[in-house]
Image 1 (tube, rainbow, N blue to C red):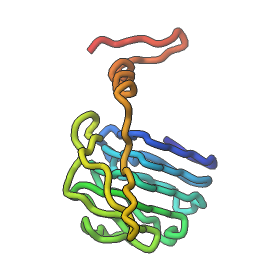
Image 2: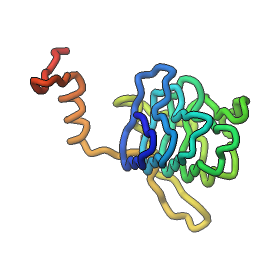
Image 3: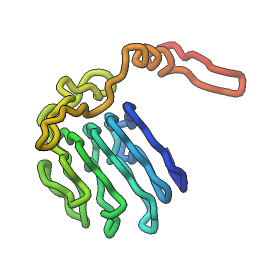
Image 4: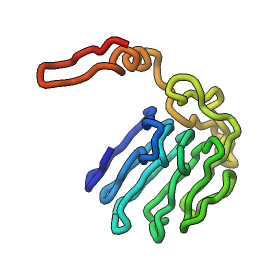
Length: 175
């Protein structure tokens, strides 16, 4: 997904990469926001040009199964990032200033109330986590983290995952 200069917002989505080294999202200008999403199977969450002026907001999301690192903090761009209430899963760390911070380490002031979990998503698209609710803040308000998709969405995914589009319409490829 590319975001040259638009504002893009995802809510309650499962975004799964191909399991290769490519980032799940590319941003340059504008804003890219994820709220209560499950973000899995990419090289890392996002990438961008060094001259970008865009911003990224990630709230109440689950990040897991990244090939390289969970995400990279671009040099001098911390003010453009806002991460809050996220659950990070797995053994991949966060890259900041060329160094990889190990799991359990905070990447900076732009991160608030994010936690590391030993539970790793599994199931469909490696994106389902059994215990996606957790306590947030001193008030003990229960917040959901990660996407919670209804069964009808998963049924449509199974139906259309092998479909191919063309100018003549939708074509189903047998499994």
